[in-house]
Image (tube, rainbow, N blue to C red):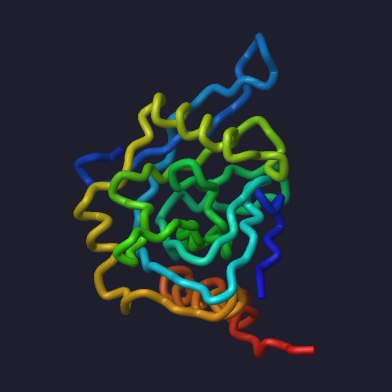
Length: 221
């Protein structure tokens, strides 16, 4: 069961406080209309991070050439509710490094966005994606989300870092992983979304309808 957000499907530091700043991108004035100009704004803070592992992989739809996903992070980040709001337009995208986060809620009231970030698995069974070295930021690349490739996402990350986007502080990441109950093991992506309802209820309790919908019994035909 996957939430159908009203945004394109792909669509998408305050160092002393342990908060990373991130960039929104707007069209450059004059010159190439496809160029992007980074504008630093709006803090984002990692609140929760939990590894997940799936028996049945699914194709990542938040990139045109997205990977087959069988593992990754379930995260919750605090941000500006106005930026998080889904406006049914070419909305800003939340990135974890060079990957658009697969959002599963809106967060326009709570200011907390919950989503999935795919990651490979290392030989020791832990996730390869290190959240303490991975910038979390908002961006609005001047390209249709459904057309975004991994190369486009990598270029967006490069521009964001050049504009000052940084990774979360190590202690912030550590706190986000504390008391998360350990890794989540699920058979399918649908079951993982059902589990994520608990995280949404915890950090964005205003979204009662979404939580109920994610917890609805799965219909098997």
